[in-house]
Length: 174
Image (cartoon, rainbow, N blue to C red; front, side, top):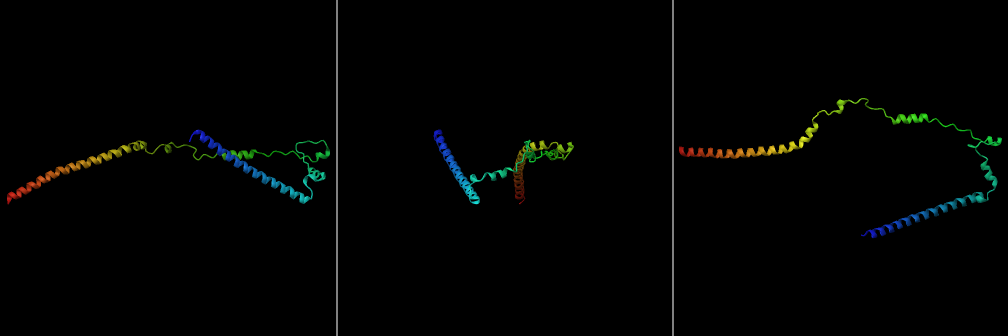
């Protein structure tokens, strides 16, 4: 497959993915639109009038609960609605608790050098030499086996000679 064919294949796949995403987005928009219509239709039935046709008096009642936080009014009537300034809560205690939690108590205060040092100072040498010792052990076993075979061959000839001399002596004595 050439790079141009791969490029066109990738473009087609991207277009299909974007078209699928667009279709999903359209479905969501339609659902939201239907939900809004149901909510507006439900309000109209409850009040008997749509929201836009409500009298101005109802909207004024909502604004009578006016709370002035950042504005200092000059009118005496509005000064009564002014909310007293809030004092910020003390954060120092929370910060101290978090700092204490972040600094765990050390388990060992002093480092003992005897615990850090290995028990046997030549453990690493033994580890490195172990492989070489295995090879030497195999060679030693082979050499021992060879020596035993040689002795047996030598003893067979001596045994045969000894047996032969005994048989010749018996023949002479008869």
